[in-house]
Image (cartoon, rainbow, N blue to C red; front, side, top):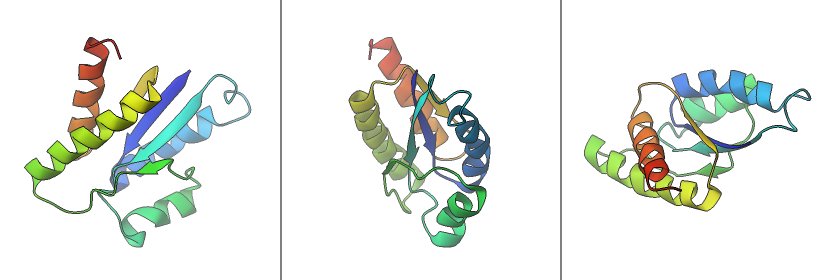
Length: 118
């Protein structure tokens, strides 16, 4: 099963660590292929990379490099960039965590593409 995990902020990194460890474990790695998308919402070492290093979270496959912007601009741009990734990857499952600015565009894009048969 091909899945895309979308994260962008510290609370999501922590939640994603557990599932990523599990699906990449010897018991499940034959059943799942995870593609990890970092929106880049939290982007400096103390807000992002330190969590990946210290928690052993797998390196993200793509960073959308969102940085800082107004909520509307950030949401719109994330919709575009996440849609590109999902069109390219065509996952069976999209996993989105939390209640941060990365969550709405991830869920909205996945739901829209699912309805359109992607």
